[in-house]
Length: 139
Image 1 (cartoon, one colour):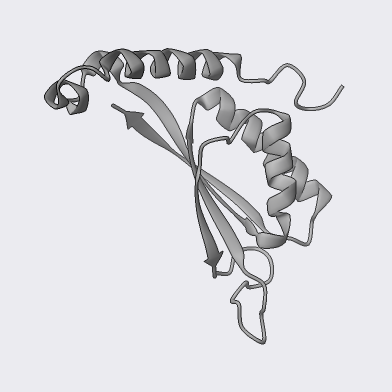
Image 2: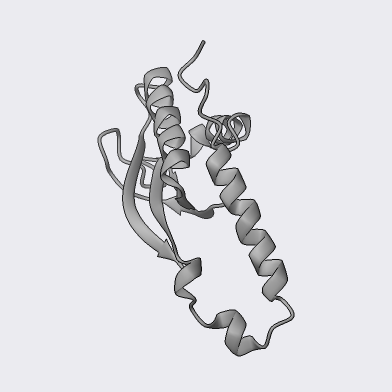
């Protein structure tokens, strides 16, 4: 048994399917109705800002695939900065770089990603990985 057992995000999967079904049914409506915010379709999400050493990206994506989380994200490459590990500046002194993912997801999915981050910190204690969470509303 590992830390991810029982945390597959079924509620998120069902919620995503329901949203896709609603989107398909509104695709024939006029643009005013498609783009107008409908209060009944609002849902609360969390925003995760995940920053990590580029060398960890393959491991992160493998974990995301394994537990079917983090499948929808925006990526920024070549991020420079200094956190709790060595600086990542992309220069001759500090040659490494970071990547950053912005992920909007349910709280359940965010909890699984949190466990993945904790596991990766334990696996790679000398590498940098940080995750920040904030609330968001989709409409």
